[in-house]
Image 1 (cartoon, rainbow, N blue to C red):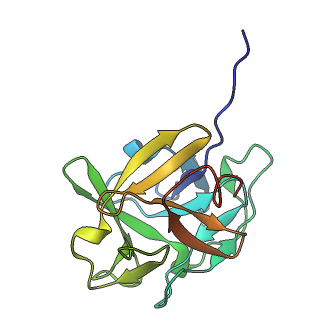
Image 2 (image 1 turned 180 degrees about the horizontal axis):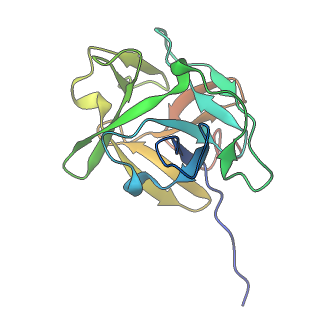
Image 3 (image 1 turned 180 degrees about the vertical axis):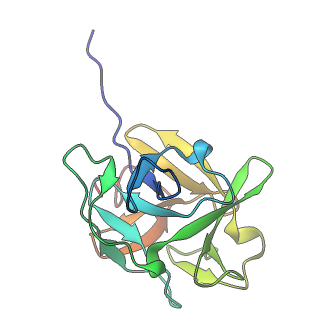
Length: 167
């Protein structure tokens, strides 16, 4: 029997600095459903090694981070502009940059654009989604999937099989 492996589009890396066995910040891979609303984490596309950055413009740049060989830890410095916190709304999630607590990640309706804005409304909630090779986030309102476009920036697309399939 042939088994196919799914590509993990997203990984969430949480700092383990509060634990006495870790002398420095170590950003360890963790599953979305293991995050709490008090955790600070970095959202990374494992296929490109690019993190989601908070900037006040459409399609946040995909910032390169260095991962260890088995892609379970971030080994480069982590700046505040790529750190996030999680919010929950029922079974859905929303993402808040630690440097702009009143803002949320959204997908602009009818567009591939993503933005971090204080004007979020219903466009800000996402759910965990698995389909084919895609494991990541789907916006609950626009039904688009979050991913890294061409290693340059983050966008949302209607399909997981084309533009963001190999990010």
